[in-house]
Image 1: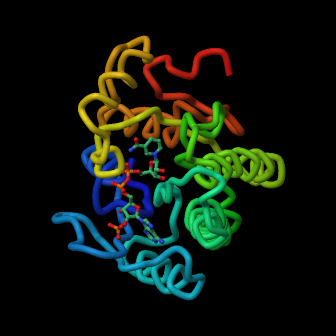
Image 2: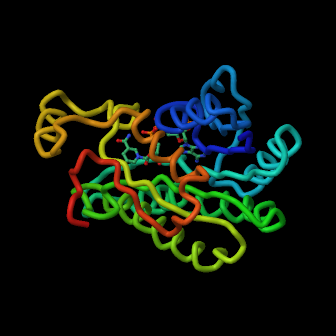
Image 3: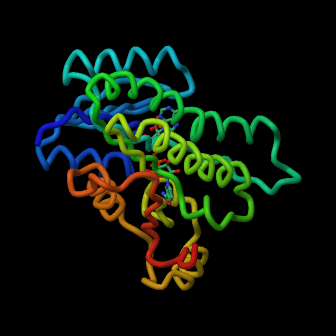
Length: 234
Ligand code: NDP
């Protein structure tokens, strides 16, 4: 199995863990990086997913090196947490533009090649917060819930073309995104998780790799929580 895989926001955190896992399994993996250094040992293209032209250029680079993208992992995301009364419209739209519209931009671009090939796998990285909401995260939760509607609409629209669209909803995971938590907050959050701890990026990557694999050939439009049981009941 050596598929052309593209992971947005693959320079660190969950995206990098997915990239390393899929590369180790033999796929031709490309990642996008925006700021900072590209990761070593992987094809990395510079791309800000809020800019459709940059998305197009990045896809052209990946297509030239690895061929049309057969597996897309829409992972890039940001937070700009604030209580509703203090949340500016810019804070709201910036998060939606990256997390939701950014995913729309890359999936639209990827679907060209997938339609031609009559096959493809798309996995969106949402969040447990999409399903339960969170204080101070109205923008983030709305953007991540939007990914579910996007994935399920795509699943219906393009199912007959052999393309699957699924969502992984991670709980709190040990990455830069969760670094700002104090030890006290971390302990409090962990106490509410049945498995009693935060996720490791590799544990999210394992679920993504499954949904992108041949083993998940009859799964589309699914939302797979990888949250230590924190969101049970949704
Ligand atoms: P990180 O902050 O560690 O990494 C985010 C990645 O997204 C970086 O590579 C970043 O690039 C990239 N990115 C952000 N904005 C853009 C943009 N406009 N264009 C291109 N790339 C961009 O986050 P995580 O690894 O923790 O998160 C990955 C995904 O998982 C996100 O969608 C996040 O919402 C989701 N998630 C994370 C959880 C957690 O607790 N960590 C829990 C649930 C979901 P750059 O280095 O340039 O900033």
